[in-house]
Image (cartoon, rainbow, N blue to C red; front, side, top):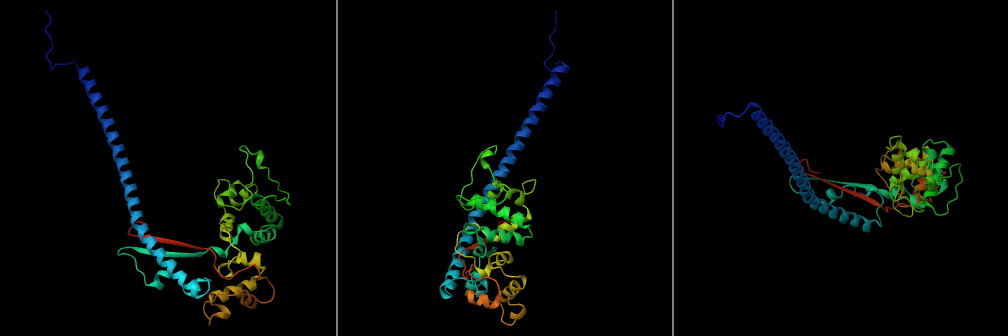
Length: 301
């Protein structure tokens, strides 16, 4: 007669299998718990950031309202905005506005109309501007040609570059309208090799293009906010003339005793620049102003 083994006297292999099963279960449970905690932590972080954004955005809109009110006061008093030298460069300080306790608010103003509006750019001005970048005349002409071919309906190419976008792996056509985003440059033949490197990253030429041209549509660039490239290409001003204009605006050099100035008409621009150059392409009033409001509270922005 066979005597059965006691309940506690199971074979060793069976006990080992149970231990392995328990360990595997613990590992999966710990992994699942860790993943859950990480997801919960991420979800909580996102919720906190969204909550911070909502709170800080209210402060930003408050600062924006004050900024717009100050700018409107100056616009009415001076028949338009011309330059921050008029006194509106620090609108919050001018109004005596302070943010809530524990917060810092910064307002940055950028005269977008100091650039060349791409919608009104032509072959001559674009070629001249690219030549100020120290590009060879033939390369400058090709770059202007492909850009205008992309933006203008019925453009006739005059350089050696004749894009054929219909032969691309995914065929497409020129939109025949001004750029809506600077990222479109990556789709334009020849231009993409100038503005992006082999890894698809923007080159120095790209950032210079962004600094010289505007996607907004306005009649004329504001001379009070124009940079050296714009002054050279549109105004045909020499280095010496641009120096005179810069000194007048900054209140340096011959104009050190007068302090910062701004042009209210092109007749003054002509008098300051001296003989040569062309003031006609410029206006003296801001028509596109970019306002950036930044609110900080601790590490939240």
